[in-house]
Image (cartoon, rainbow, N blue to C red; front, side):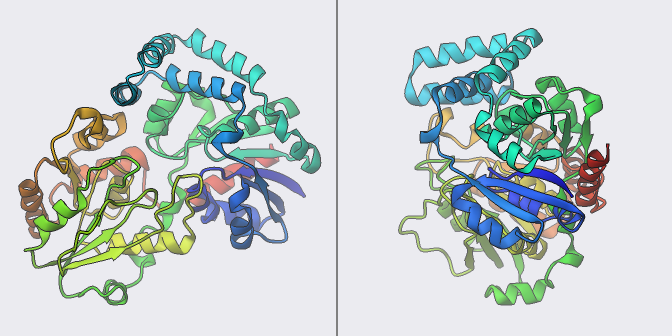
Length: 444
């Protein structure tokens, strides 16, 4: 029996990979699967995904446990990435902490990162300094045939890829989300193969991460395979269960959280602007972070949905049922209001008219505003696609909500562009493609 290692150090990997056909293709075959995850989540993942051939290994993970060499490597990897998104992030950080040395260093490193020989030199040094030797005992214990690093921008994944290289084990990496290549770090380790969700991300990881194009494969987004109406609970039934009148139109509002917008309570302003509309407003609170509602009492047409509000992305856990609930929310809605988040792509998959909140609760500097996020590389494309509408005031929000409710096909072509650029052809076979790709590498 052959053995595959799968990393799950970032919380959403359990939803993105383990809850999809990609994982069941492996788990149901003549393959032993060893999942690596933070110790805090080991028991949960073992209960949900464990089986005769599936074992979860818990790894102690926390910022406090990082060694000086890991921090050194991560600082350089973050600052060597030369993108518009990283430029905004470093300026916003400087505006908050006024650390001139850190800011000037980050600019210096970013300019160095424009040169390929510098990027390769960094990878060479980082491979020597952060070797991943702490994972050697697992490679010796299980003798894996393949490593699938499900988030190549996570420190533990990078360490496991380095350990795999030293042990002569084929490593396949994955870019987990649409923004990762332009917003996280330089690709710190180049695996044997890479899987991405679309040709656009393939171009990005080849151009910015130096990953050879002929070793990058676009497979789609596996958990979106079930994002179709036929897989969802009937609209009327779902709305009744959630105490929402199915006879009325539904606006799904996915709120921003305090992880990104501190002391910027936008949600009450949005709900007040919609309170006079003859609609239901289904408010989906953030999965990570909290919504700053305070003592606010919402209008009668509002129903809240709480998906968890985890403290960080490492601890976040979305079960298959929780993801199905999100799909039901999208399917049952008529339009979606959100902000600079992955909900943009989620809504586009369901072809839902989407409004993006572009105003703050009160005037504030750019580095504290919601507007900075729309200047990120991946959001700039979403705006330029014509598939979403960015509103700059509560009045404009109300205007576009009413118009989209009247004209649901408006901007449909733009939404199709978002799906094409960040998914590819939506054929509901992404999980199967990924699972078969991994099995194929077993046989080679």
